[in-house]
Image (cartoon, rainbow over all chains, first blue to last red; front, side, top):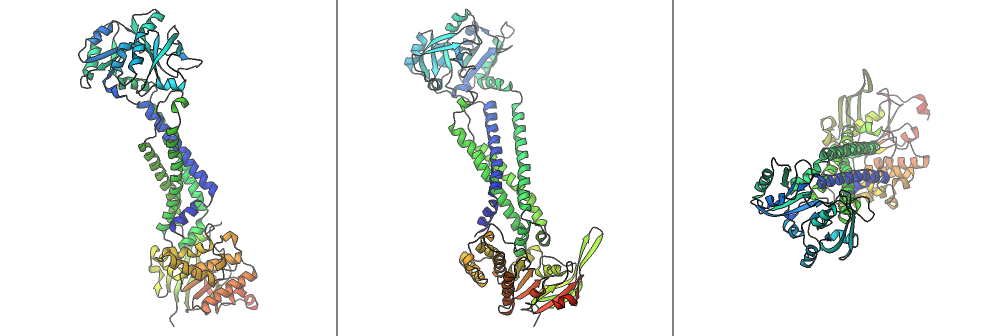
Length: 381
Length: 232
């Protein structure tokens, strides 16, 4: 027998309690890691390669307010602007779904790939799309999810616009962070809504990262004091604007995580204290035999750490494994594109488990250290 | 021959709130090596307290207790723990075996504190188990042993470090007469044949008869044996 064997035997002497203790840590850390990942995905959306050059231009009053088409000519002439496309969100429903599972945007096909450079489509698909006003380009993820193929019809029921779309799928694209969206001709939307004069937003590609801030300022200044003032901002800032609609979600999630960890600490300390209390007499015997206080404290801490780290492996490790394999997009109804547990999050979870293990063990451990052998021997079984 | 245990003016007082309880009152005692000393007396007489102080698991309030020439009061907690590991073997009424360890592993426990390697430990454990006649039960858990067998494992554990002193607190209290007989014979053999000093606390005059010397305590002091005990 070794000291390690002795510690493991003691940790598992009551298998049910050991299992439940480890599971309480596992479930709590699973929840903790899941919340941390969700928080990161909500507050720090992933960035495409071309994001640093892209600028979103929307109505200064509200994103829901359209912008006049005539602004295109002004924007194109601003120094530093490499490309610009109209970009209007349609928000239609596909098949019998009750909510939008993939976004649909009306754009100018000739300009689209100059702005969204990471979207890769074959030249054949692009040309087919450009030539056919009633066609659309569909992201590969949506094609696979709904088992669509080139040539199929894309029927979308309008929710924001008083029109339904009936388009032919002429091609597919991939290479962006979100290969689910559908892009179609803005002129088709204009015709259906009988409104050729407005767009939802403009998306601009700056010539370089260095000039991007200046471009933003120039665009804002160009339409200052007009009937359609704009807010131009980087793509990241535009995305963060959506996040801010959630309110202080970071504080909310951090508070929930803190409550989880605190509750787990109370449960762990209580469980460990009960387990050690039952063994006071045994520990007194070990003291009598010659085990020192620090040795007994080490045994207890090791036992506590063993159970909490086991829980961390099951909980945090389990979360990393599960989220690596599941289709989070399908599970979250499209709310999340990625759901990766980073090494830093795993490290945080294991650190919490270690601190938990130490704190859970130190409380009863110190009681054992303070206990005299005689008092311990008097303890009833 | 120098005594193995020398006690001079030893007192132990417990404070319970404002009340002071004297467990041992100014006693003197010498114990010769290889003695089999039994301590008898009514409950609360101080016999277990005296045993605990000699064994180094309790400290006196005043006076001197020297074991093998070492004043135990002068040792700090760590040194006292080391001293116990090497010099004292404990046998308790409730056996006090670790339930998740086999008989072999229970006996091996004190040796984990030594620098001995696994082969040396194995040899000592096997010798100790053979001494108590349980070499064929080495792999059994305590719950798989009878009360008498458990106590014999406890004796083996007490002997595995070859201590000079073996202390036993009511070792036959939870045993049937046959098992008690076996245990007492082992303890007697340790004193008579192995030269160990055995100090045993007991209520049972028949158990006390196995010793070569009996001391009676009453209210923390040495007393003469009562008439009823003499008849028993």
